[in-house]
Length: 312
Image (tube, rainbow, N blue to C red; front, top):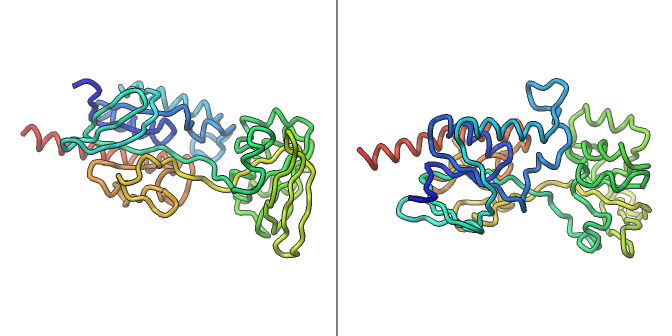
C-alpha cells in the first residue's frame, strides 16, 4: 500500500527525531513529518548549554542536524508535510496532510509548541515591525537600539543575553520580584551592564506609528504606569502547544497540551506523544529527548504486538 508505514511521527524537532532513531533502529518502517510553518523551537535558539555531553555547549542547528542524520542513518524517512487531520480507519490511523494522505499502525505526536502571545494592545499591529518572539531570528535588526524583553524564565533570560550582543540597551520587564530562570542565567543578567530590570511590572501597551516607538508598563506593587522608549519588544512568556489538529482525537488539557501517562501513551490506542506538546512539566531539550525515547519504544511494542495479532 502506498504511503503506509509502521510508525508515523509528526514533528521534526529533537523529540520527533529521537523517536525516529528508536523506531527505525528497530527496523520499523518510519516516516517523520515536519511542517515548515511550525519550525522546531530548537531551530530558533542559538546555543544549547544544558544538554548533557557538551560542556562547551552546542549550536542548536548542529544538534538538529546530528539528530536528523542519525534518524536517516537507521532508515527513517524525513519529509515536510503539514498535517491537517487524523482519522481512525480500519484499526489504523489515517494522516491527512496538506499534499498527501498516509496510513500507519502507530502514531507519535511530537509537534512541540510555539511562543505564547500576551494579547496586549499593539502586539498584533506591530508584529514584524518591532515586535518579535525570536531573538536569534531578529536580533541583528536591533543593533545599537533600545529593546524591551518581557518574561523572567530561562528563555527570556537567554534571549535577553543574546540580544545584548546587538542592542544598545535592554529593559527586562518581569511581573514578579524574582526571576524563574536558573541561577547561572540570573548571575549573568544581573552582572550585565546593558541590561536593567523592571520588577513587578506587566506590559500594558505597545505604541508606535509605522514601527514600535515605546511601551507602557504597569507596576503592580506601586500601582503606577511608566512609558519606556524603545524600537523593539521581544516577548517570552511561555508556549502554546501545536495541537489544534488533535482536538477530538486525543485528550488535551485546558491549555491544549496532550495528556499522557508514564509511558507517553495518549487516550487513544496506538497514539503516543512526547516533548513540548505534552503535559509533562519540564520543557527542555533533555526532557523532550527522554520522553521521545520512551514513546519510540512503546510505539515499537505496539506495532510488534499488532503485527503478531494480525498475522499469526
